[in-house]
Image 1: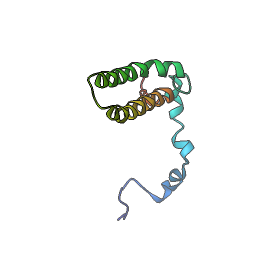
Image 2 (image 1 turned 180 degrees about the vertical axis):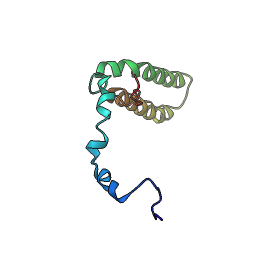
Image 3 (image 1 turned 90 degrees about the vertical axis):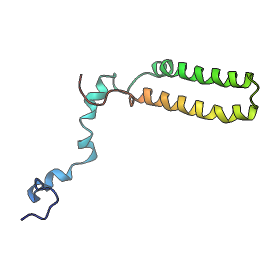
Image 4 (image 1 turned 90 degrees about the horizontal axis):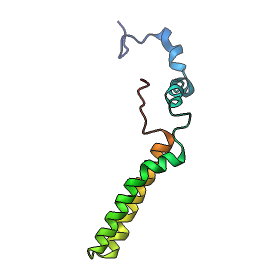
Length: 103
C-alpha cells in the first residue's frame, strides 16, 4: 500500500516534479500573443482608464462644491488616483485580459 496522499503520484514520476518555473509558464506565451505581445499600448490603457478617473475627479469637485471640508477632498483623492493607476497597469500589462487560452 502506498503512503502517498495521491495514488497517482509514483516515485518514477519524480522527473516531472523537477520542472522549472520557465517550463510551467511556457503556455502563457500563447495567451499574450492575442494582445500583440506585451499587452496593450500605453495610449489604449489610458483611454480605458480615463473615464473612471474623470468620474472620480468630478465626484471630488462636486463634493467640494457642496461645501465639504477640503481635508476630506485630500483624503478622497489618493484612492481615486491609486485605483486609476492600478487599472492602467492592469490594462497595460494585459492582466485584465482573458487568461483561459480559449479563442
